[in-house]
Length: 282
Image (cartoon, rainbow, N blue to C red; front, side, top):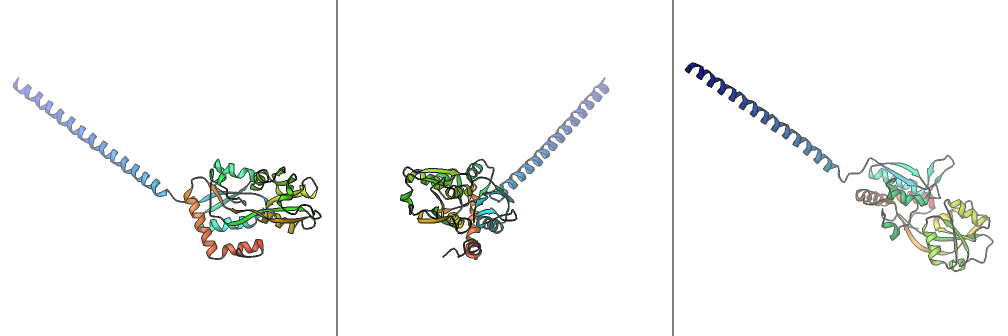
C-alpha cells in the first residue's frame, strides 16, 4: 500500500509540474505576441505622424477655357495662357505634379468646396465672401473692372452712364455682383462663356460689357478691335489669387513660397511680359 501511495504521489507531482511549465510557456508566448503587436502598431503610428504636413505628389487644378489671355485653348487645342504657365511654374518650384481639369467659372468654387478640385486658377478675385469657404494664395495679379461698348457709341463714357442699361457680364463673377449692387436700374445679362458676353454687345442685345479689365482690353485689341472700344476708368480694383480647398495650410504655404521665389528669380516677370507685353512693374 505504501508503494502504491508513493507512485500516486509521484504521478501527481509530475502532472502538476507539466501543467505549470505549459502555463508559463503560454504566458511568455502571449507576452511576446503582445509586445510584437504593440511595436508594430507604434511603428505605424509614427509613420503616419511623420507624413502629416507633407505635400501630395499630385494635385487636381481646375481652370476655365475662355478667359484670355489667362486661360484658353490655342490653335492646337492645348490649354495655355498666363494662369496656366504660372501654375505650372509654381508646381515645378513647389515639387508636385498637377492634373488640369476645366469647368465653367461658376462651378469652380463649389468644386473646391466639395473636394472635386484641390487648386483653382482662373482670374479669381479675392473677396471676403469667398474666403469663408475657400483659402487663397497671396495675390498674384492686380486687376479691376472695365467697360466695353460698341465702337460707334458716344453716349456711354463711364460707369454713371450705365444706369438703366443692359450690361453683359459673366455668370458668378464679381462684375455681376458689382452691377447689381452699384448701378441703379441696370440689368445684368449673365453668360457662362465670355465670348457670348462680347457677342451680345456686338449684336445689340446688350448696351455694354462690364468685366475684368485685362480680358476686356485683350478682346478689344484682338477679335473686337473693329467693333468695340474701352471707355471710362478702371473700377473696383481687385486682386486675383490662387484658390485652394479650405484648411490645407501646407499647400497654401507651398504655393506662396513658390510664388515668392518666382517673383525673386524673374520667372514671374518673364511669364507676365509674354502675355501682357510689359513686365509686372510697368
